[in-house]
Length: 247
Image (cartoon, rainbow, N blue to C red):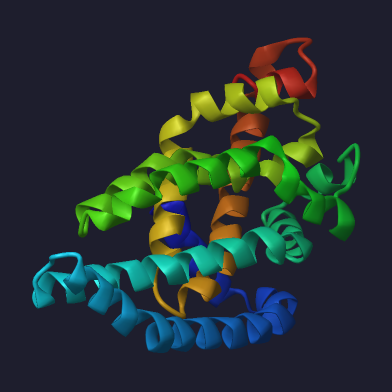
């Protein structure tokens, strides 16, 4: 089962995770409802009218305006995620790792990421790269349907990598080491990123999927730890960090 889907199922099946997200979920619901209604009410008709003035038929102007509104809602979700979620997503990540039997990962972390440290992560190269790609690839959305699909495929890998930034911080990996792990599991990271972006494109509900996507990323990390523990005998005197790079 894809990790994004696993995240939804695991979140629903474990009420202890609900407690961690109750406050953020209420805030998210309010932000999601306001942004969805606001963007549709304020942005849909003017954009449709503008596209008609640019020469599109009323039908295609309506379709493209609808796509643009959905994208704008997604971008609102992205900004919200980059600015607000780093403060509480790590708690979800920690709880899932602990529930999967990997408390040692949390205890051995060289520098536990507190709220301030996590919020500062949005200024890192990975996130800045994502923002640049988002801006550069925005014109793709003017190509109905196909453009949005291409946009998600272009950004999927980066989003998947970013989903494990907190995990990589706990493990103490450098950029080079992170890239080595990413390359050895590129298909899974890309799949996770693409699935997450599609879910976050869903108007209003996309905000809720921020949390389930975090659960899915944590389950992926737990699977990596399981694989490491299963195969650690094969690595002789390698350090734990070096061993991890070869799973």
